[in-house]
Amino acid sequence: MYKRLYSKVFALSNQQVPATGVGLFRLLYGLVALQEILFLIYFNHLIFDPIPYIDVEFPMIVCFLWLWAVIAFCLAIGYRCRFSSIANYLLWLIFVNFTPMQRDFDGGFDLFMIGANFFLLFMPIDKAFAIDALRKKLAQPFVHYSQYQPNQVSRLSYLLPVLICLGFLYFDSAIHKLFAPHWRNGLGAWLPSSVPYYLSALDMSWLLNQESLQKAIGYTILAFQFSFPFLFDFRLLRPVYFLIGISLHLGITLSFNIYPFGLGMLIFYALVMPLSWYRKIGARIRQLEPSLAVLYDQQCPLCNRTVLTLNHFDVRRSVEFKPAQLHAQDYPALMRLEQKTLLTDLYAVDRQGKVYSGIDTYARILIAMGYPAVFGYGLSLPGIRQIAQRIYRRIADNRARLDCDITCASSISAPPSPSLYDLLFASQNDKQTKRNLHKVAKTLAFIILLQLNSSIHYGLLYRYEIDTRQTAFSSALADMSNALLMFSHTFLGITPHALYLHDHFAGYEHLLAITYIDGNGNEQWLPFVNEQGRLLAPNWGRVHSMWANIAVTPNIDELRLKKFIMKVTAFWGHKLGLALDGTRFIVKMKKIRAPFEWEANLRQNNLSGAWSSIGYAQWHGREIKIDLPADIDAL
Image 1: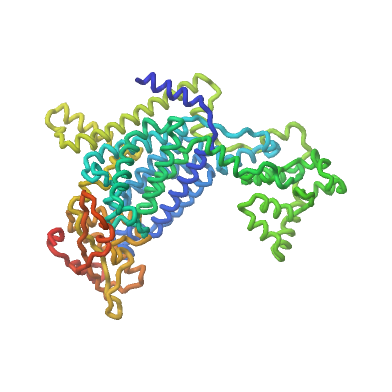
Image 2: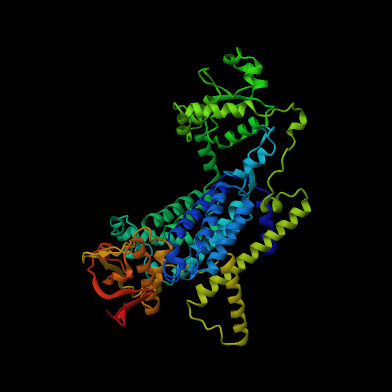
């Protein structure tokens, strides 16, 4: 078995493909991480304070979150990829394991991002859409960009993250779904889409009221998840799995209020998309012929670095940069200029033969590139143009020039340190490469073992209620399994994906919301759960998970419910500028239905139910008194 695995790893490592998808995956991952960190910054008092704004246990938490945001931004743009990917991974681990973030505010998203980040550590994420790729070129400024070949990477970079982070997740999730009656009835997507706590503002009633279509969607999800790890990499089936997967996760992102999880899953489809599609999209974006030719002084290090930088961001390849010493004679419009004059400025010639120089050249470059055109037009505005011209003139007149020979092509500064991917796969020693591939194969085998352990432990033994403590041997195996679960859960994000199943919705027949009495004696809804029962933005993602999955459940834990009522009233009371001591908060409840059989208009009926007041909360200094019925479930 291991030999077959190693042979597959060896074969895939020798298949070189464009790095486009890997670079896009890193960019999207960084942006999703960044938005989640900004979310944590906004809700930091709700999540991390024992009593929001009143008992602040972590006063420096925001500083660390902003540092994390900077690291995530660097990861997104591909700046110092090796450091930023390692730092981001460590920060996920620290925040998840040493703060209340996972215990009360997780919902599975953090573990998913940890698993994805683990693979980022070993992927060639600096090859495309990355500042590091530019930094490597800038280390050799006298090498023209045309001499660089398109970056190629191993197919393993695409296959392994998708197989493990998506394929194994899907398969594990499908196992759990088979035990849920609403999934077996084809209503796995319909039921959570009809419970107000889980809905976005997008009204999907027209779709939910199509019973046959809903069942088709439910059974398609099951078939898709069971078959994905085995069939997604077949050339003819890859577009099918790409389109179905994109549709399903885009639907989750738009229709549910757990958009971070939907976005996190969507980024993996940058690796699933057929490579031929990237080539076709690239061919459509790029111009057949450059619309602008720019002549520069090839003996000026600053000019060469400027050219490399502008070309790096010219995704449409609409500008062609040429050394003036070699190509000025190719343009009749420049024949009237002496070479000394030509080398004092940056000159450009468009298709009509019009000549631009100095700051006007930069303006035309930005306009020709397309997406930064607004800045190009801005440079031409009166006032801005004069200021930019003076700055340009000062730099251009004081730049250094070198009398270059062949030694100019050598590096004049140290290139960025190699990535972990380069250390594993770019060795010049064949024996070392084979040893590295054996390490990759063994690591993959170990990860497969860890995933099987989780799926069997939770998906089969737990679901069938098998007693693993009957004998000393089985008890030892159970302890070993639990130790592996702890390791894989913490460092690889491997966890059971039993989301929104029957054991979650069975008996989920009431919603809770909070209102308050304002200074005029009027009852107002806290901007948390609205009159329909929907959690309002920005209380989505992990805040939704806190309230809908932990505080309010089919079997409500009074202590936990009171804890979160305390947190929500303190947080939003402060945000609204309420005087907590003088504000009375009212706990509201309304009945809903969560059946496992299809019903017409269930979403609308659940949204339109009537509320009743069942209790209140009143702050007295740093203490809160919460009065609730002894058994809310019985109401």
